[in-house]
Image (cartoon, rainbow, N blue to C red; front, side):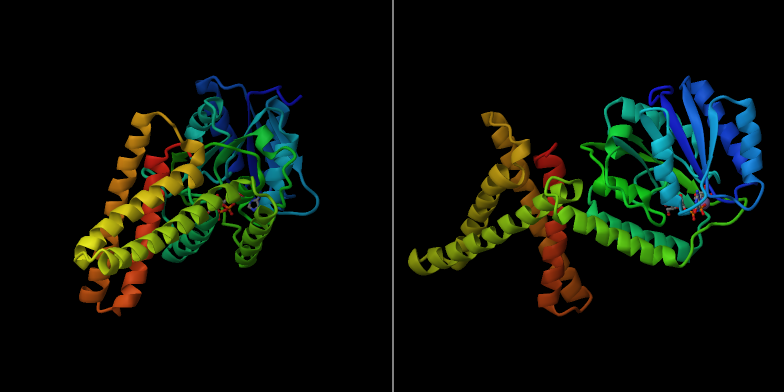
Amino acid sequence: MADAYDLSVIVPTFNEEANIAAIIDAVNGVLSWSGIHGEVLVVDDDSRDRTIGIVQEIAGKRDNVRLIVRGEDHGLSQSVVEGFGAARSDILLVIDADFSHPPELIPRFYEAIRGGADIAIGSRYMQGGDIEDWPLARRLISLGATVFGRILFPEVTDPVSGFFAVRREVVSGAPLAPRGYKILMEVLGKGRWDSFTEIPFVFKDREEGQSKLRPDTVTDYLRQCAGIVRYSMTRRAGPVSREWEKIVRFGLVGSSGILVNMGLLYALTEVAGLYYLVSAAIAIELSIVNNFVWNDIWTFKSARDLRLGRNLQRFWSFQAVSMGGLVINVGILYLLADVAGVYYLIANLAGILIAFAWNYAANRHYTWRGA
Ligand code: GDD
Ligand code: MN
């Protein structure tokens, strides 16, 4: 039965009487103009208002609309996971009922998965994405959650988005431990996936009804992050460890470069008798070579292409990124120490960290593209 439809649109609801009829209508409208044979699956947590009655009535008239009313273990994530299990297609999409997520983008998610992505994420934080009408406090909380999430998934700009689509294989059999609001994090952390795409969208705050965000959402979220970290420790091939293994290796290689640099600076100056700035230039260049070789055969070995031209191309790219990193490091040192008056050793540490982030990101995306 899992392929009775091409797409399952899962709409979790709790007290959405003001929006539910309109969102089902909007989703169905999009499905019909885009020619997607899709179903709408409303997963309700036993709403106290008229939501259930309204959906029942629509479901009585339209074959592709279904309602699940949950009696226990209430929660947004739990509801979404239940929707995954009940869906009758192999592409699962989640959208809020309150029009915060624009339904007209549904075909783009669908095409992204059809085109090969395992997960398609609606992002508020990439170019073209935005949030409208959120009070500052809400923005800050969300940004905090996002920053935290990005530590786990550095490649994903909006790992806590509620608007996303996944291929069924990603979640079927995955040990999802849904709690709280951030089901996407759980899917990213424990699902089986290789590739993802992000689709920018503008999040609009609801006009009808109220947000169901409660204070314990924050503790739930932290517990969830901890759970994903714990899970990743025992699973070296999991998505979190896959990225973090590269970051750690890149850091270790960088440290080896510091040793090479210092050793050469000493040897060339003291033993070979060169002027120390000349030694330094040679030491820097050779440490770049050292780092390149180790990153190439170890950190990013999956992206190696042994053709000579490609090797050289990677080397020049790494060299350019490293020079950029050097400029960033010294630039930040100067700005913080001279302009902002920060103690220079602390300023240098900040420079090193930011240069490291730059070096990693630029090399990951450019030099060893596809690693
Ligand atoms: N079944 C069920 N159970 N649905 C729920 C529950 C619940 O306990 N709580 C909320 N919902 C439904 C709402 O009816 C709505 O369709 C959707 O889930 C989002 O709920 P909101 O209360 O509108 O959430 P929000 O706007 O504060 O949060 C949004 O932004 C977050 C990212 O910052 C949502 O999009 C979240 O999914 C997203 O993570
Ligand atoms: Mn909302």
